[in-house]
Length: 302
Image (cartoon, rainbow, N blue to C red; front, side, top):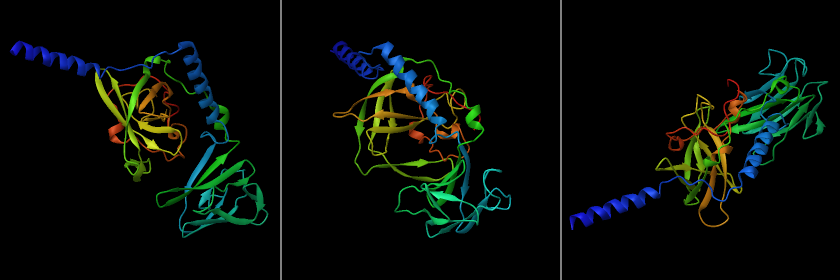
């Protein structure tokens, strides 16, 4: 009887262990897959130097309540790049969560492509408003209770010196099958950004996958689209990859709970490319205790 019991226990352990075996996605055409990842890498490089990318950022200025002067003169509250705007470009007024702009005489400013000497630059109930002067573009961002001006320069010298993002070798074994453990739609998790601000972010579930005989979990963030957003860390951080972790998107399953978690598409946060970003950091439960040697490597020294 004892031998039978031991046999049953061993059989249970063996079956349970099988549940934690990593599962590379099946039925994969490797040639097509390598081409897909290479095209994704090319798009990532092209995005960085696009108008919406991160390499053209030229400043991030936090506004104080009241008047904030801007221009290329060093005496301004917001010092824009020299030679790109007059020494006194005007001022921005932050009052009770609304930012208005007033340009100095002789300084032409466009607000959403409409020439104007004054107008609203930020209102919580309006869509994004972009100010323009020459090669400069700027708009207001809000982080918790802070209001900042993010400045782009479409002639930023860094655009010419940008090189491709180095990546690990593509490895289909890191395209894993996993599942979603769905959470209540009201569930949130705390996310901290590089400014030290912590706040709740909507998280509708957790990705569960196996690696090296163990089961691991990654909390996802819901951005309202057809993909989960994941912020994670691993043992390559601060070595081959960016020190504060990497990001990844995973398609939301159309039905059921089965997902493909493709670490080959792990990518750098904006802070790897510029000091003027406010990146969210991995929550502690999303820091994996092993190396993920695929996806993007670090870029630059930010």
